[in-house]
Length: 165
Image (tube, rainbow, N blue to C red; front, side):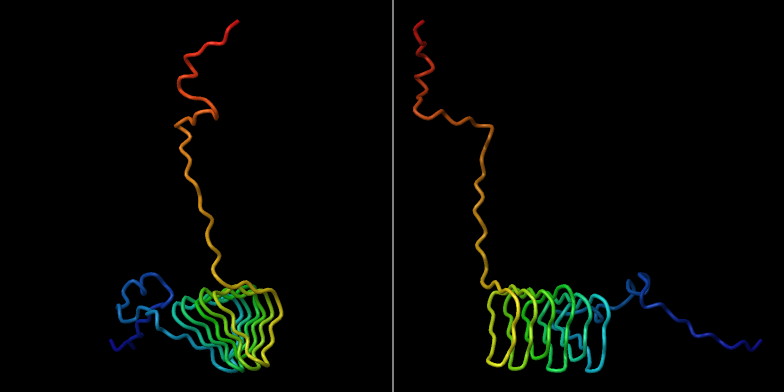
């Protein structure tokens, strides 16, 4: 008669619960993901907005927005991708920034980097190869193989001339 009611719980990781979530929970491009000092993340990390790392990340990092690694922050992994990367701490990975990579004061980057622009302040450390600027895409000529090109040094009237035997 007096059964205790068990609270109804939902698993936040299932598709059913995310389908019923409100649009207010949708991630906006200005959303900030924060990894606090003393925190460690083991595995690949993807952030839909901006990411600030005060702790340590062991794994690949993919950020749709900007990435900031503070003086206490570190990233060690295979690859780091972001729009802009600001380093006060340490990154040991291949870095790709679609806009800018800036290494401040005591910042350290070890690995090959690709960025539109690369700024390294005095006192900062960079070890690796760098590639800056956007490479122009090669123009691709479209050839229509259905239309036969005339042979060089021939005119359409040459077909009417028969060689003498």
